[in-house]
Image (tube, rainbow, N blue to C red; front, side, top):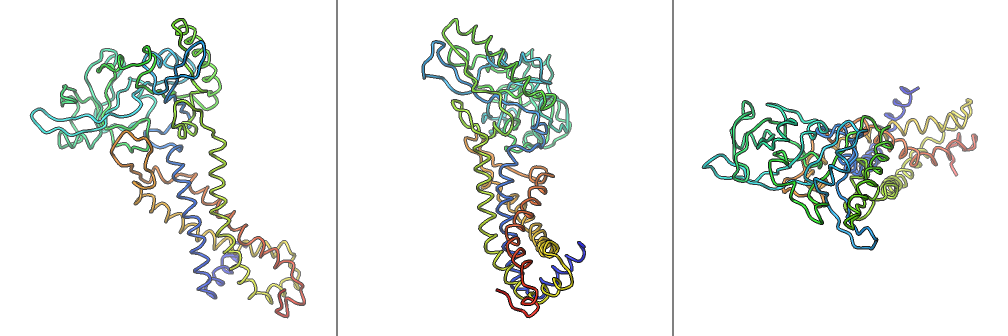
Length: 431
């Protein structure tokens, strides 16, 4: 049956090339626009290295400090090392918890007596390398002993290794200057896209090798740190949040003696919620964000579907006699509707493939425009590749939209055709 539908669809395309071209182009454009919207959302939430465990991530990017006796005045922003350790590093339910600077800092790097170049530096703990999955091409990450000792070591990207040493291999153990201080390379990793916001940097160093512990504000409770929690599975999210609430209650009893209260606003957030949490002093509405996306999808589907529906009706007008003969030989209305929808679906899927390929190509070529990041702390442009843009979910979304567009554009014409009077249809008359 599928082969028959394909042959019928191909025949219709050849018989009416102009209408068919407009039909395919309209469908492809609709899928193209929708898939761009989907991809712009996917880069924020779908897993890809070095954030391959996004489905198991819980994030605490910000927090708020207020007065224990109440009031509207709060200090909002990243947390301090002390707060991060007391509230989150002490959790027992997760697989791992990492503290790291909320963004990157442009810092000069060079070899002795050589010109310096600014690169993006992130300060982390040793658990950072357990939470995020970097691809090491040389050396290894710094361990707990190195971190606790505050040794000046660094993991660098391949591009920084080429910049400093002219090679990406056999650079482990070599020294360079970071902000004019000597650091030793302990590992080299593949370059990371800025779209992996939590993991991204060009150089990673232990925050114990700097004065980050003392980089605080609001009574040592706020600082420049963020936290990512790696759960063993998503099923552990409720237990982790319950443990976070217990830690928060205990922490507030301690700092409450000095008149302070830490306000979490239901943090930690999963990857989807964290992706839209741009402010520290408000909690994002995930349901509202999803509704807004579905409204956009419906608009991008309904508008072309109206135009495609009129073209489908026009094609069916030329097949009135054929439809009448099929009805006369026993085809039911359901069979007739199924055949018309099936034929149209073949065309829609072919156009959908074109639209999907166009969206991937456009997203790859226009990554600077489409994926520009609000409040980004790096001047490096976002970069995308196939591993970021193409996932199983990408194809499933495209397939879903093809089915919906087919129903919207061909459903009413197919229903009207199935209800034709047999005698009038055979005579070629359509009302």
